[in-house]
Image 1 (cartoon, chains in turn orange, red, brown, green):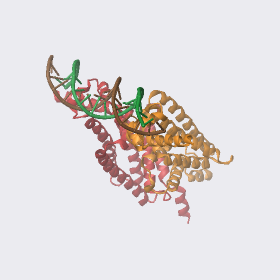
Image 2 (cartoon, each protein chain N blue to C red; image 1 turned 120 degrees about the vertical axis):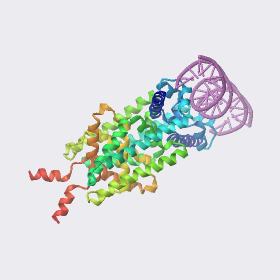
Image 3 (cartoon, chains in turn red, yellow, purple, green; image 1 turned 180 degrees about the horizontal axis):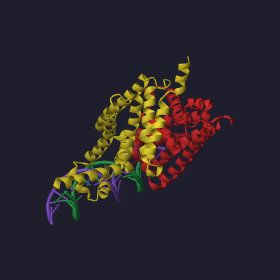
Image 4 (cartoon, rainbow over the protein chains, first blue to last red; image 1 turned 90 degrees about the horizontal axis):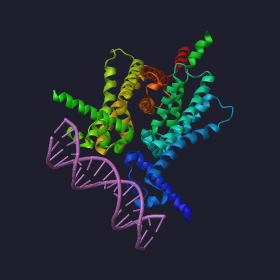
Length: 207
Length: 207
DNA sequence: GTCTATAAGTAGATAGAC
DNA sequence: GTCTATCTACTTATAGAC
């Protein structure tokens, strides 16, 4: 079918746009660079996308939403009786999986999020708020389980976690080790950063 | 003196460039936007800077180096017998102080670091390596003091810390609370993420 | 579907007055 | 030192052939 081929070309342009966007930025990503990477001429892009802006915006929203969707799916796949710590580990893993496998989309989004035109900013912020709320839910569960370090400002801590995770797309590549190794260290790291020291329990049990 | 006024204007253009860069990106920062924010006309910029590229590059290198310099100064200000944990707290505080007080420079750098022209990339990477090495020194001291969580991949952990800290410039403003509160949570957060659980010591002492 | 040729608009940079 | 006027180069987008 021609539609299958056409769709492949569309996806190829989208992926090329993500790569160029992550390297040149929202304003610097030239249609000619994207076309060259997708192995066709500039005007051919207009067969698939209405304008440069539509193409670029699609990269941003695909990249941004895929994180939210992938993490939500991972949480829903957990058994209903999963505790807060399992949710935390699962969310860290899922976030890094999308972030690093779709890393051109991820870096395109993180580097250019603050540079979006006003209308897209709205959509972006709405999605961000939903994502933050999901993490606040996990932190809330940790608190309910009595394992959250109560010396932390919760909203600040949530942003520090997301910063550590989002930033991976800026530096990680396969030379830094297997994806699973990064995920494992990140899980230990985040767990340590949020959880109260087990010996606090020990002390409080002693009282 | 005229040279004092001239210098003020130069600084004003530089600050305006940082702001515009952080919002529009490396390629999107128009000289006309920068000039408007600095309250003069575009050609006046050429009296102080050789070209758009020179101006933009100066913002990037000032922003990037100031973090390194400020943190080094903070570490050198510590008493010679300071232990690894004091160094860690001091580095976290110093990093956030520059990052958040110079936040337009900071976000300009973090958002556009990967989008620099090749020659600046070299300088940038060299400075980054020095900064990473400094943090590796702190982590090494923690390990030497026997308090580092040995389950962590050290290089990955270092990048997670820097991600958490760098990312603050993306979300923090005064509405998220006082700078000192952010610093305090970040110190607890980073300490928890890197240090082995005190009760591990407890257990090992029991053995 | 993809191309070549080209129109229309914009941004960096320079010339020269004040 | 800063301005107005202008040149040049580049990029998006369209027209129309194949």
